[in-house]
Image (cartoon, rainbow, N blue to C red; front, side, top):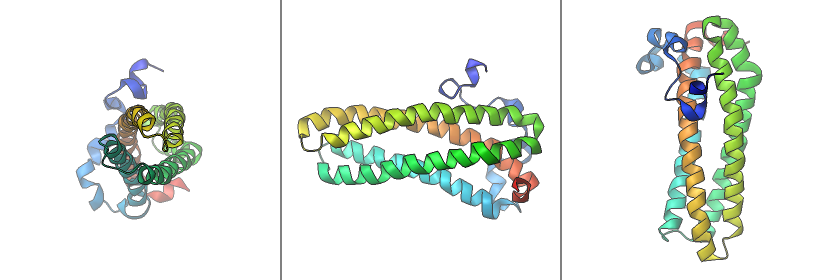
Length: 190
């Protein structure tokens, strides 16, 4: 696969893979007859991932500013971090095993896009492993405030790094998947 298509190196999917976006522009999605149900639920899941990352970023910045109690930070990070990782793994698994193959058959002209998104999931898994390691490292240092402060800086880098990659992926995924479902309906996934 071309390097330019890798998650870490692209600004968006190639225009040739975004052809249905012309027919179904983002600003009109909610008015489409196939929006309610699967599409709205799926987009809500994406918003949940964005909110969890934003909350973990805010919590980490509060800790770095020394305006957050370390125990409070640890509780929130444990809750949000585990929800983020577990839900994202499950989300990717159903996409890779079911949605992407079925949608690629519905629109073979953009099938390569689903291969790219699948590749993204593997790249994101590596970053999620780094995220988990950084989160666990920070959580182990909660009793030692000065060491915690130093480790929190590294964790902040991990959170913002995975956040940028995930945002790129989620946007690409939305712009590829949603138009296919809007065109063919959720029944096409059965």
